[in-house]
Image (cartoon, rainbow, N blue to C red):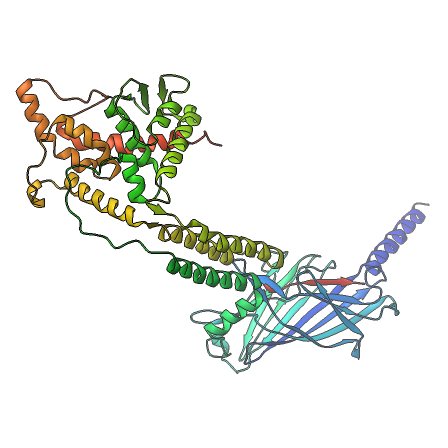
Length: 554
């Protein structure tokens, strides 16, 4: 009885194992014969021997061949694929080619003919190109022999690569990788001969795994494409890049023609030194007109001017500035009343920090609007309307590329250049009027007086006396024109002398904070650059390989 049970168990095990062996579809061998041509194209013959059991392999097999890759910059590389012949067991086989997402799929077999279980040997021959890598001292073929898309295990894979010239074996190298995509397994042996090299796996490749080879040889064996040819390949394979380059060319041409059409700035007149700013123009308006734009220094100059006039007091804290409303009847310049109304709409004291960003931003917007209303179009023109057609055109092209191709790194860089061009021409297209040019020339003369250390250098007669009143009155203008430090340095000796005479150190009544008359330039730098930075922050809301492919049965 015991012997009978043992016999039954052995028979069952034999039947089970036999069923597994007979029922498993697999690739018994996969060999690729690769012949590289002088023009860098490749003639490839693949011999694939399979075991079919009527499961996935019913009518035949299919082979996927990628024809579209991406380089490290995201650019498309499109290779040619030309099918020649197909056979099964040495007899011509029916085949057809279908397009897939990244290449082509070759079906081997007849839809009306079903295969009997057994072993079959398929062979396909094709031509491809643009598979060679070119380096400074050598050329290379990096080729996924089998592809990693097979559902079957591959018992053995091999390949032979033959060059068009009989290069010495000592000048050739052959390496490889085995495993799934990205793996670097070394289950292979390789050899080199004069003019060729071979590689063969030493272990079964499971489903989804493949064999990749990397062969190198000296320069000059094949004809390397020229830089022009490579660039032409790049444009042909990347419609988005071609569209982007054409868009760049069109935008550059249009913007240049627009700039040429717009009336240029009137010629600069003779610059004469002036003791005082042109009557009727505040420090803020002086900077706005001379720079032909609004920035934080415009607002800072306006705030300092309001302090000097007695409308507010500035207190320097550890991090921020505090503005306190005071009262004065001094004449207010364009937009200054808006600043007073907006800053002190809720309280008579406002701290310049992010918590009050709405209040600060409201004052800035109101001030900018007032200056724009009074001076834009009279003293200068931005001509920004000329930018709209090219900007809209560029945006449309971005959408077209996104639909037709892809926004690669190269394409993104080109549109970044286009955006930079629009920023450049936004600056170049601004032009002062004749009236504006006359005023700017006078402001430049006043700036000379503010920044030059010695009046004698300007050959001035009867310059105004250096008094605390003069220092404070002109300080907002010096801040507006970017010469605050130079203007302050003129008064260091004046204030030291005044202190020695009176025994009292000078200190602006409108400013509460550190004030060192021996370092007047530090004070001016603090109230100009530092305060501009604080205002800017306060106006901002608080934050928050080739080859590859695979196959299967059908």
